[in-house]
Image (cartoon, rainbow, N blue to C red):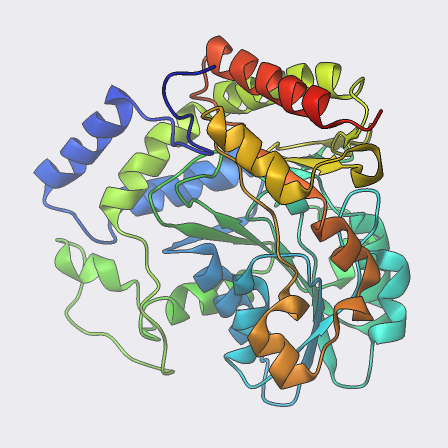
Length: 399
């Protein structure tokens, strides 16, 4: 058994991040400035986006995207209950309503086959969430959006650097004017929270192929100022600016962007390490009774932000809570992703939801456990997780 506790997640940082941050401090730019602009351009290049706007969280990114499409009170946005709070919270900032659609039992992503039945005359957009880093069936989503004239705002908090059919999530796909995606207002929102593939501590990015919407997001991220506000403190800048709308304080700082630049240079190796760990887990756990390994698809590149193991509780004589506790005793950190939103008090009380309103999300939630998967894990860490899970399953299986 391990002598020290293995945290569920840790950022992977070294001297490269320290050097970038020190350089930002020594430059005098600590808020939005040249490093933020460089991070935006390099991130856009990395994922193939036309426009990228750096902000201080993925929550801010989704909020700005909804503002850019003109969401208002009484409107509806279709999304999944199987997600973190932010996905639905940003909808309600406008007095709009999140309309939940159940998930697929295969991959826990929103089920496209159920979306059309949830569309009303008040529906303005769909927010699909790429759970754990496995892309949603985007062709189906965009086909529906095009037919009903809906925007699509991809919650890609987990999905860097995921690919769907050889295209990075966030990639500009509108070069083909005959494509369905060319007809749809489209945003992709990323997270750089501490546990993500790359981190800026706190941070996010909006990617879009629409120049007007990109400028709206950029302007609203900094108080609705119409000029490039940060440049007013440079030699080529002007003191004059105009506020054209009541905006927000969502801009990223150069200190955060400095960290992001260092992280972005290492993204390939950090993702490859996650992929290696997932492969090792899969190779062992697929043969253990009582366990179901995460879904994957040949037409996608999984980002492996999360490794969500599912317990076949009918083959085990221990509960999910006992499984988690047994790993904790063995010094292995775990988590649960996610408690479906319709089970939380606010959503139960506000929208009168019952657990079985979304039966797949409810059923699958009761048997999921997320295991550690991050690039800073050593081979020993990975082997400790594997051996601990093997022990717990061996002791807990039904005879």
